[in-house]
Amino acid sequence: MNQGLHQLAIRIRQELIDIEYTLKRAAAGLEKGKLDNDDLYLDGIALNLHGFYSGIERLLERIAVQVDGSLPQGANWHQSLLLQMADELPSVRPAVISDEVRQWLDEYRGFRHIVRNVYTYKFEPSRIERLTLNVLNLFDQLKNEMSAFADFLDSSAIDTP
Image 1 (spheres, rainbow, N blue to C red):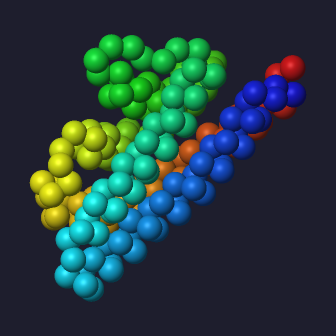
Image 2 (tube, rainbow, N blue to C red; image 1 turned 135 degrees about the horizontal axis):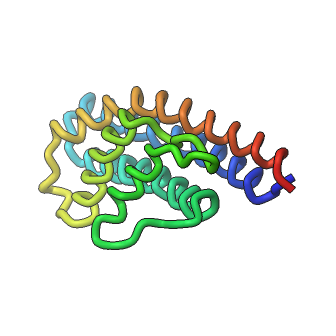
């Protein structure tokens, strides 16, 4: 059994649990912010959306290094990583994520950049609300795809010494 692949599958499953918790916090923050008519909640929501994408990207980086053997380089490596994960590598692995999920994730990648580089009082409330409402549906599909990939890793771990 290839312990590295098995450990990566375990890590994917655990990280998905943590990410789901983060998204529930974002949704709760949005609900509470609307109830209290308080835009200070936007900061916490944005931070949780940042955490969502960062967690996913960490997993994709590990897959790129450990399974593909290469992490994209250059100024646009974050976008290239998403493209790499949406591609099948024949005789290595299936696509980790679908092209549809890749496109959705790219929007959250861009938002993460905003969270890192813009003062919080300049956040666009309608965009944060839209991203928060959409992320739960995105996560359902992403979770299914990443879980299927973790299953692939487990079966590959058994097949390799």
